[in-house]
Image (cartoon, rainbow, N blue to C red; front, side, top):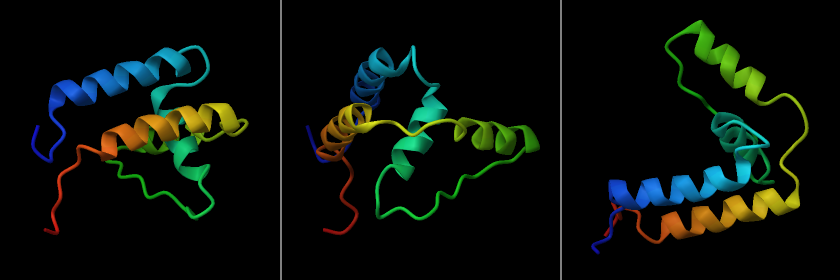
Length: 90
């Protein structure tokens, strides 16, 4: 496999993540909270085209953070995905 992430691999990784977060958080909430769980992230810039999308993003951040175990599971999936990313700076 070249240095890119194909759609099938993305879906397998996403399905793996849905298994452990389904009962706890929405995928949106999981994603935003995972970003904020890293000490080097000060803010998240979310693109929206409708007010309802902004409201969903804000709502997704309410409540507690991820917790260490869930953050580690997300980190592992992220590491797997990074192995297959496109390299723009060769």
